[in-house]
Image (cartoon, rainbow, N blue to C red; front, top):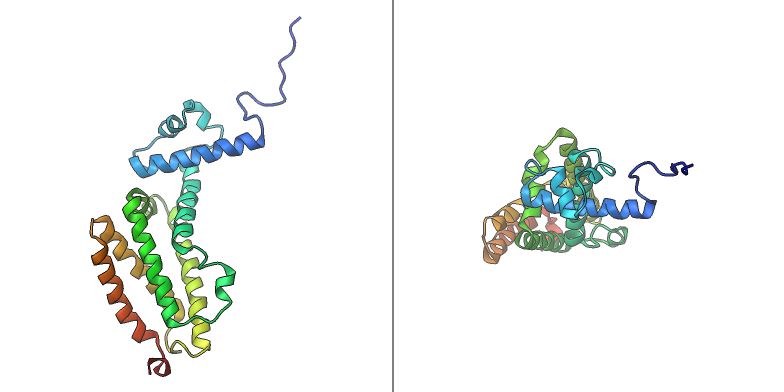
Length: 223
């Protein structure tokens, strides 16, 4: 008499949570590489599975579809961007001291430089985040805009404290300035993707700073 088949795990089910999480991370990293090289529209779940070296059907043990893994891929890319660009700028400890206009400008220009460096070293990532992924569906658009809102709100907190301390003029809307700084970050990245070099980037930053700084300073801080 044959022994009954054991059913402690379903057919093909991952062996344990640790292996499941490891495989999920591998698939997310693979999907990131596939999406940023082939493009989301042209990529398939079979491409992702092949990148990891697993069978096509194995993908569906972890994700229901190509769209299902996309949210994790976006998080993967955004985490990398924020870590490399912002560093500890947005950590709570960075908000504990009084900020000056010069510090704000240095923080912004440093973020621009780092974004452009990423655009030079990994143009596929920046092109995906700026151009391809935002057009996939409304849900993803909302997530990306929400991230922009978080960043703008963080800048707003910096600026509001500077207004309260008299460093920045009190007749500017700090929320609007936060969004302006985000918007001003995009053109040098696009120009870097077009092949323009460091001289072009430096000129853009200097021009933006020359316009921004006098508009933010109070009359007292200008003297």
